Image 1: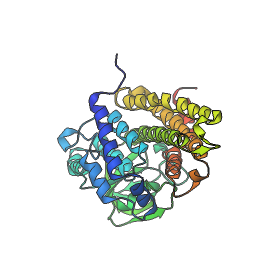
Image 2: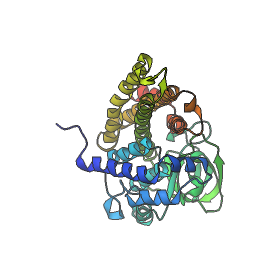
Image 3: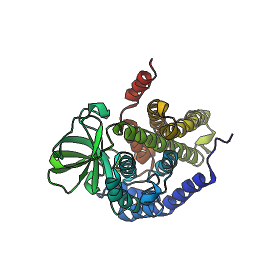
Image 4: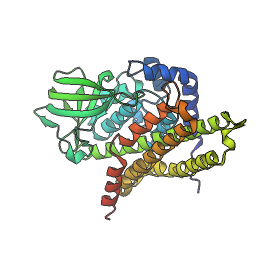
Length: 359
């Protein structure tokens, strides 16, 4: 039995990687990171042309109709390059509408998401770290929604918000609708900007089949964040190895020092085996519903922790320059901070793993 990736999946990753290498090298990445715009229009259009706007959107609506594993593989490559932009929120919005929308809602929004004519995002969290759909308090009455949502990716640039509401449901809110207020959050990861959203009697369109979909959308998000973290961790190791092979002290490269060798080896053996966690979590999301929650939380908790530690170790190997704003490592370290906390902390998800496992 072959547990590897298909030729098509490898080609998908290679295509994304080549695109980002050409269109978002280190100099461009720093420009976006240091700039004021949440979304670089030309870079996002290029991602849309690669098909990233509709990988899992069903083919009748203009998407590729692929599985979550393919979306996760794309997320891994984007994480490896610390790609800036609205991919995470946009991808999850497509998943939400495809799962929870009726035919009219799907026909209205999914083709626009696939082609990039509409930029969407998800508004799931609420103040106090309420990521769990069972704790959402935004309330829908008479076709209008009232409540506050926290840490929404690229909300002020989006055309459409998929909002988590009381009871674990989802509702569509257009950003320009009356009663929608958006305030930027000064987050640490400037490759993926966040906003707080206040909804005051804002008109909404409830996804009719979404009563049980809110949790599944969050689990899809856990898989994508875990994949992003794996890609980011592997890139941290690559950068640390490159630095160790070029930085000289006492007449030799620091890679000759036993302490550095041990650190690099430990980083590799802790990260590489975790690849299977997000592969299986994405597969379970599609094909093993009874294990979806456990696998998604386990992958997110473990891999984001490994990314955080690997980024810290890579900064130390780079020495003083690893902490500087001008260097590259600080971008991946801050991306690790985002991945670790977005959609819930590792501790919260380990507790969830224990709960759903009956421990």
